Length: 264
Ligand code: ZN
Image 1 (cartoon, rainbow, N blue to C red):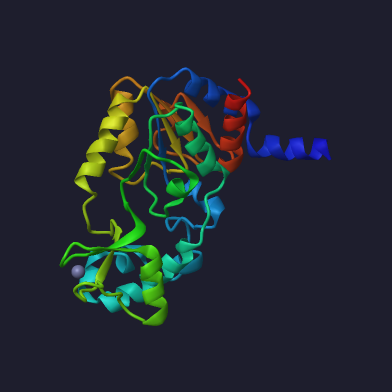
Image 2 (cartoon, helix red, strand yellow):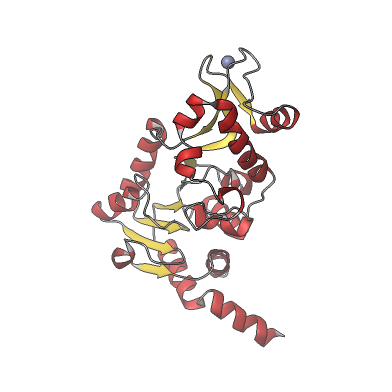
């Protein structure tokens, strides 16, 4: 049994790679983590940039999740987006999210920048968290600026089809996420750029590093003299500039990194 388990493990995550990343983290003073959709796939959240499964099947995210779709026909927008809310609302963080939160608690990283809107880093206990694409945590009224929490939005969606309305002024709500066609929140992006510039190590997890401007953050770290580690299945444009690239399953890799650090 033990031999089988260890074989599975070595296929999923090369132990020497995880130990090398643990060394880099232990030797850094201002490490920061950047995560993308790949860290949430093991929690059952499909990456919509991968060929379609679930709710992204048969639709063009660029069209249905575009701010113009919300402006032009909020009821139609929410008929699609409401499904996404319902699908995300009950998802739980996985071991990779947990290790990232443990690293922050141990003082090994300064914070987490994420492209994900799924709240899973927060649920795992990450504290200094910059959600550069926003979060499904709340929905915003563009009329009065009021925010409505996801649990209430899901309740409203379940009781009435179409766009949920602001409880205060009956204006259709917009999810507090950055839709296609919208700019990233300026203050959050500025804080993320500062973290990236100051970092002596950026650890990119589960991101193809192909979507700008998030993909520019590791470039900032590199240009300022910091180093880069990548934990992502499949190639990224920055692989040849990374000090370390781990290609295995993201949960197995992070679990091994956490174990290696805990054993010191
Ligand atoms: Zn309102």
